[in-house]
Image (cartoon, helix red, strand yellow):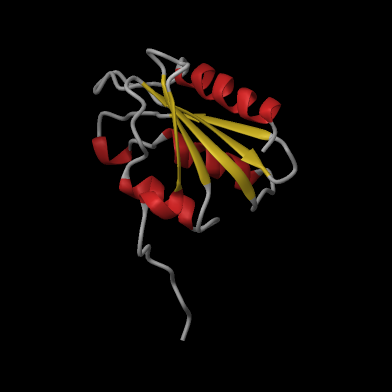
Length: 132
């Protein structure tokens, strides 16, 4: 990932966060996913009164990217108040596409405060389906 791509991921994850629909939790999340072709696909969380139907920003970004034909990803940026990592479901969802995806965790309250990690560290021993 180049410095320009990194800066773009950070900016677009923060921008996507502003579009979140979070009337219940008030916890706004933005995600930006860098595809192998260099395109950046964004997502934001969308809550629902039936809480189980809520969709996380990360899964929206991956779903949008897959719908556009992408299957290989170089990095994921997530913007939240406090710079929190993705939930367990999003970690497993991302693991469908990469064992070791670099992840930038952005504190949207202090956007210069960015923590870098990867999927392998966030989801050790992940579930991986192996057909018989």
